[in-house]
Image (cartoon, rainbow, N blue to C red; front, side, top):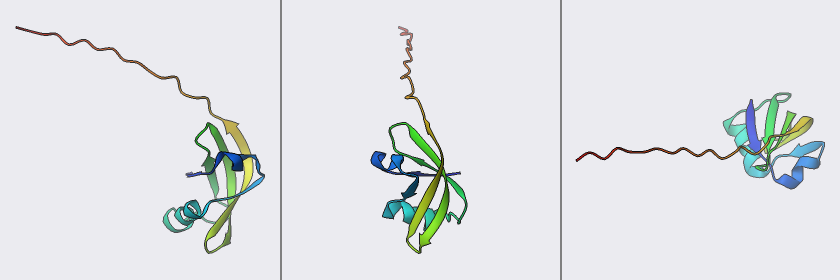
Length: 86
């Protein structure tokens, strides 16, 4: 499933129009087709699964199917010790 970035304020809508650069990537590079499921993310833990619909040659809309919040990952810490030999 393809993933595309949207601004955090866009995550509240039922239908999301992708920004110009994301629409270009979706339509020209990833070649997303009408009716295909895609995932949108806002970089703050919210993911939206939706169905893509081509609006015109340069614009893609996504109808929201489900929304989920992904918890922030806990930072990991690794400690290593090196032996010094003489």
